[in-house]
Amino acid sequence: MKSEITKYPKIELLTPKGEDCTAAIVTVRIKGIDVVKRCSHIAYHDNVHMRGIYENDLNGIRLAFAIFNTTEEIDHAVQILKREIDKK
Image 1 (cartoon, one colour):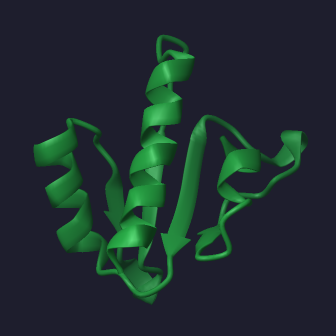
Image 2 (tube, one colour):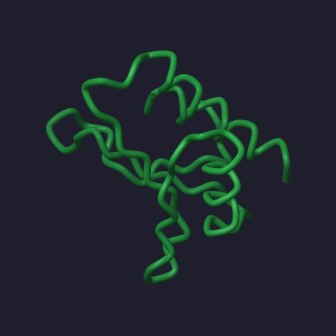
């Protein structure tokens, strides 16, 4: 997922890229969107739960994956992030 996200310059990966510094939680920022509004919209319309990280003006989106998530579900989350770029 991280390698796919970094292909899009408007999506900033806030989670470290190195395998030794990361886990199943990924945090990104999409430049120019209000994460609080978008995360609620995505959860309701796409059934993908992303937490808005708005503390300290971070304006990030946190995605937490688990062992039971499929590759298709992760790809779907990436597609939603890409769609958010296109809406701007």
